[in-house]
Image (cartoon, rainbow, N blue to C red):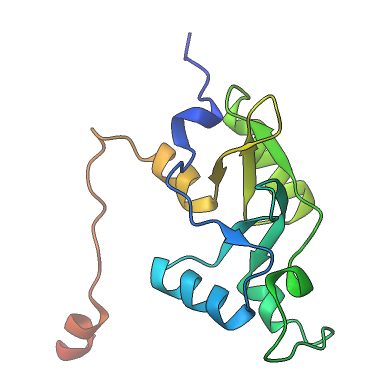
Length: 145
């Protein structure tokens, strides 16, 4: 019988976490430097306050200024799972709510990690899988294909 893959098996624990009082330009730099499109947000007391994504930063319905902070742009509705939950629960949540990240919380509500689509894709491809074959379109073009 196959073993159930748990959220803890795939979640990212080395997180970029943004503070709610950080200026948006600094938050953008942090996301860009880390090569990610969003991150959990904590308040001054270290509690999970929301999520900020590049989509939030580009939302034309928001009137953001140079003085705007993460709190002004973040999404406050956060979907969460626990590390012991089956991974399929996080996947269903992402599909149902049309979201790209689910935070992982401990029993006390503190931040434990995050699950993003790339984590799920990594779980699908096991270490003993054959590497995928890539097609270099430049090579095809050079051959006139």
